[in-house]
Length: 285
Image 1: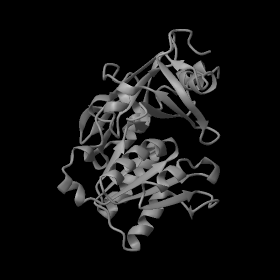
Image 2: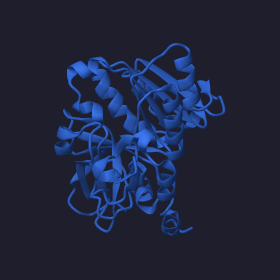
Image 3: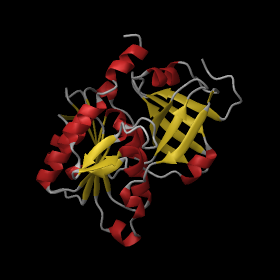
Image 4: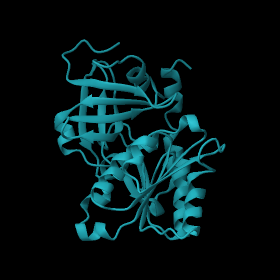
């Protein structure tokens, strides 16, 4: 049930984006004032709850809100989606944490030379949106490729239409848009004459691995987000260790985004599965 403590971070909007992903717009003016694309928040739903990292899916400085996209996997995310309604409040929202996307630090001259393609999958589609929006606002051409198994699982299509120069929807079963995975669509675009100075991939670990392999073949630099590995958001627990160029990094304090060419994806995939047994117990399985 929702916390009985004094309201601090009110849920202003709650909406299911598809059967498994919920969008929450939360009142957090101080965070919204300084948030940047690529960063994340630590959220505690109620007093006895655990703090969990959630990537920022949008922010509105004027309204003082931040947007979260949550897929109920563990006990805490299930509670956030199932037990909280519009008007309820979370106990704590801390942030923004982590490093912004690297293009945020570029000069206007550097940005003028960029042509960026995003490859998004599943829940990873949501945190791509503030990045694409930021680049659009700074005059950078942006193409976005969104992939899902079926049409019903695609999210954020309308939002991306307002910030992407070109939007490409992909489904594995061909029920909507391009039939096939996002990396196949990227290869087709390059074959048609498209060129990009950089790519950003956010989604399931296996998708980011193959996006990186595809971009390497095409000669496109790529950044990937290791946000799914994060647990405590401070680097203290060590759960989000990832090898980048043979050096141990922590997704929460050194990332969450890294050069995809340098990430050891096989190690990262093993690490991402390490708490599945505990999650199953928490969910009564």
